[in-house]
Amino acid sequence: MSRLFRRQPFAGLAALVGLGLLAAGCSGGGGGSAAPGGLEKTNLVVAAVPAMDSAGLYIAQDRGLFAAEGLHVTILSATSGATAIAKQLAGQYDVTVGNYVSYISKNGAAKKPTDFRVLAPGSIMQAGNQEIMVPRGSSINTVADLAHKRIAVNALDNIGTLLVKSVLTDNAVDPAVTFVPMKFSDMSKALVSGQVDAAWMTEPYVTEDEQSIGAVPLADSNQGTTQNMPVAGYMVTANWLKKNPNTAAAFRAAIIKAQAIAGTDPGAIQQGMVKLASTSNQTAAIANAPEFPTQQNKVLLQRLSDLMLRFGMLQQAYNVKQMIPKS
Image 1 (tube, rainbow, N blue to C red):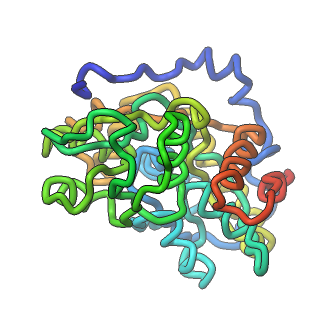
Image 2: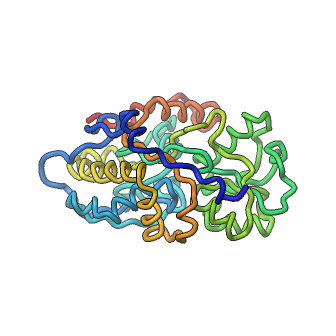
Image 3: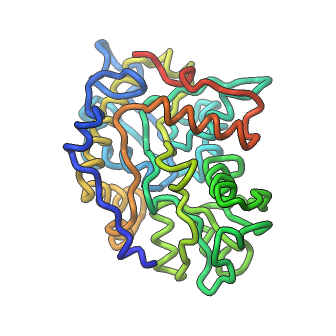
């Protein structure tokens, strides 16, 4: 079905207020004002996948919200949260915006855990925001047809592989498919050439590939076990957070303001994606956006961690409360 007819409405401000998402304070990885005292750092490097899940980052930059907090932020593009982690651990990135699965995997490692913290929530999946796509004219017409096929994801053992396995399992299909890692921007060529049979994509790549190569959405990841699942967050290391509490609070304050704007102003998302994520005006205007929470939902995040354990992506249970800083 054409993206033009599948556009999802944005949640209104009243709905956000009703859910208590605009409450002040930084409890549960939420927002609030920067902590008193001077900033430990004013120049920050942030790596993010140029996807709609990162829209709050682009809005904060575009609207001068970082500058208002005394921060100069340089945004760099990343293939995935997983690929950015090594550079973050090496001190090259201050903050990364990535899928929670990659960070939970690091934190929950059985032998050598790495302590990442959620500085602020990024996105919660909504209808049409994360799709399993097939090329035009594909013989794959149902989820059952994906059995033993090659499916592109932007990184192995991340949110994409988890969502695909969940969709397959929920539809009684053997999740033993072959995952092929590649950049989102390379997936259209891989679909057309037959390098892969299907591809898991997030927006705006879903809409871009519908428009450019006639790719067809086969299955929405926002269903069954993974419906309304948290996808991405703004992540820092525990050590960085300890050294830079005031800078962290300032960054968080800017992001939470941007998240609130994203939840009520589709135009702000479109402008940010066009200016800072190289998305076309047409794509940005019709792509399906996720939800942009302003407080961390620990229950939903724990459900994600539990699902990782179920699919063997964790060797032992992990309590996500460990990665959500106390105010």
